Image 1: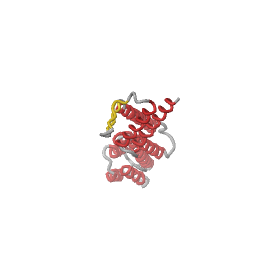
Image 2 (image 1 turned 180 degrees about the vertical axis):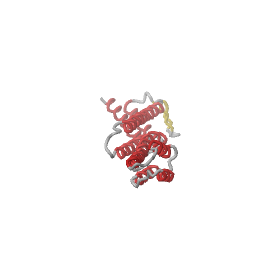
Image 3 (image 1 turned 180 degrees about the horizontal axis):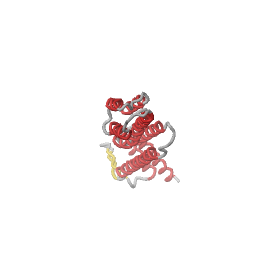
Image 4 (image 1 turned 120 degrees about the vertical axis):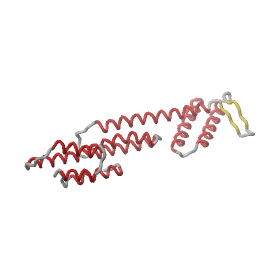
Length: 220
C-alpha cells in the first residue's frame, strides 16, 4: 500500500512541477531541484537500491533515471501542444468552410473563433509563427468576404444604371473592380474607377471603411 502512495505522490509532484514550469512560475533549475528532491524522498521511503551516487561534499546528486524522466515529461508536453495545434487547424478549417450562408454576423463569429483559437494556442505554448499560420486562414476568408460585399454593392449600382438605360459594360466593370480589390487593393483607385464608370454609390463608402479597418488591425 505504501508503495502505491509513494508512486501516486511522485506522479502528482511531477505533474505539478511540470505545470509550474510550463506556466513560467519556476525556472528549469528550480524544476530540476524539485524533481530531485521528490525522487530522493520517494527513494528514501521506497529504498535506495536505485540510487547510484550521493556526494554530499560537492552537493552533487546523480540519479540514474532523472534525465529519462525529464525527457518523458517534455515529450508528453510536446504531444499535448501538437494535439492542440492539430485541433486548432481543424477548428480553423471548420470556421472558414461551414455555414458560408449563415447569419449576417458570420464574420464577427469567425473572428471570435479566431481569437479563441489564438488564446488556446498561446496557452499551449505554440510559437507565434504557428499561431499566425492558423489564424491567417480565418483572416483571409473574412477579408475575402468584405471585398465581395463591395462587389455586391457594385453589382447593384450597375443594375440600376442599366435600368435607367445607361450604356455600360456591366461584366467589365465587375471584373475590373474585382481586379482592383484582389490584386493590389488601393481604395482611391477603386473609387476613381467606379466614378469614371458612373457606378459609384455612397453605400460603397462604409464597406471600404470596414475593409480599410480590417487591413489595419484585423478587426471589424
